Image (tube, rainbow, N blue to C red; front, side, top):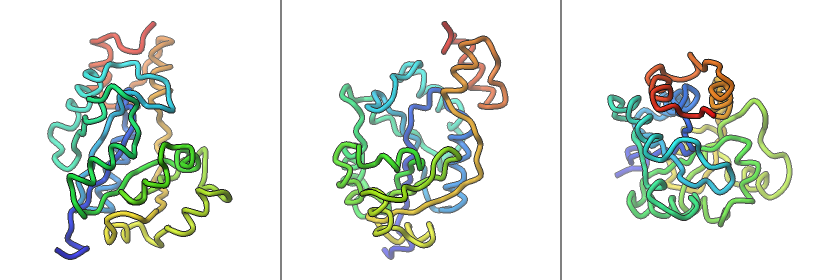
Length: 216
């Protein structure tokens, strides 16, 4: 099988607490760029660098299922929810690499996360397992100096479509149209009694209201 025809696996991780249109639009943007790809939304159970989720693992999976049940190219990967230990990306990527062989793997992260990549557990091993596609964020840019900046300069592709030619080992940058939506903002709106309508799918908002999530 040639590099051009190998399957492409794209991983979008996060707490999805709750899932919103920003997450969904990013997944669709990836399918627009890589039409052959399958995108997996991967909720983290115990993210080591963030506060613990407000919804339970089961509730976050249920919210994903409500939206994605009829979208076959966007899947749900719940493996990190099955761990009791903190969810380190390198461990997850090692598992996925064993499963997919030498297929192309692309791991998405925002510029804010990428700029702190050298703080991640076993961060230098990541590119031995996956490509990294950095998504531009309004609040941060690519690092200009330091070890992460050097990594980007050494491994960057000119066009993100070139990532499909590599199983792992390359870094790309994509400035997608921004939907300035965050789960933190949505939770804050709910907590103070305001409606987050039109920031997330109505089926998710109905689920939140039915289960009294994110309220005092």
